[in-house]
Image (cartoon, rainbow, N blue to C red; front, top):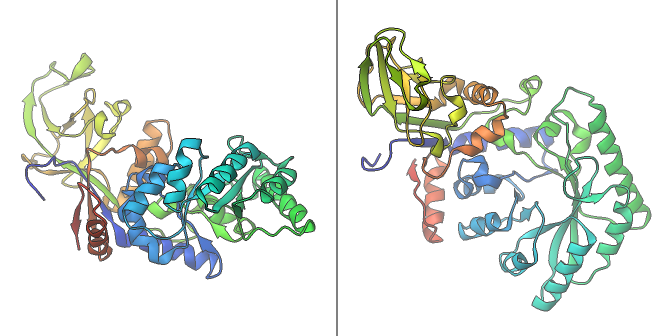
Length: 396
């Protein structure tokens, strides 16, 4: 590890990610396509290294925005990439130039895509999004059949797919609303078939639906959270065995002894009840370790829990190591990871009153990514060949 760089790092085991994809494949079988979601920098794990590691196992990749798809192309990713969060006019030409598949959320957008594609002399591949009850993007399921037929007839557009998002698929089995969304989606597909319209790729299933609603698999599934070793709900943990790939760690900068009555950090929110041994670690809310966790969360030092004390600062925070007398300067501190990595993420999410998705995604670019496993050197070689600049480190 290079000594002059910040010691706060995220280690990602690429072999674990590949194992998780294999688990999905084993569940859905060989005929159904797999499109992992790598938006938001692959949920904080690093989009290009993750994509390059799993690309041999998958059929496509899903991202939220155009720039994420372009980044993957620059990183040497060659498989189909679906941009799922809509499209604005000034993004169309770059999307065409980088062979990105576009999600269409209304007829007006489809018309703009068609017009621009004709101007550029290309045929745009699109997937039409139907809102079956998510209440976000998409064509209302009530008008979907009519609108899809209109889009299907537009020039320079190839309707490759149709999809929708499930709102409550991580609830307990036989969730009524998920079943309702599935029925709405199926009714649209049946109406299209009656009009001799066959769309090659139909997809509905996110991680939770993959695990408990086989009827939603259709032609393609979209694993997201489960790629990164997390289960979308506790009652789904028994279905397949996922590996947790992430370790976020840092090292102790300083250790000091404080007397009874002395206070720690901004706002003096922690008062020492007696002589306390306090360590400072170089990670703060600017790295994604939320200030909400002040005086609430704990980290691991020498495999023992150490509580956060005082307000978390922008660049550092303090931990109480009084009960760990063997601790010394530069000792490793684990924020997330190890045998209980998944539980640590869930606990942080609970303390932050949020979900594990946000915890994984919030650790920012100041936290260096270090990649481990057999696939790491192959990814590194690809990124160098494609002249992708990165601050990551690689270990085979």
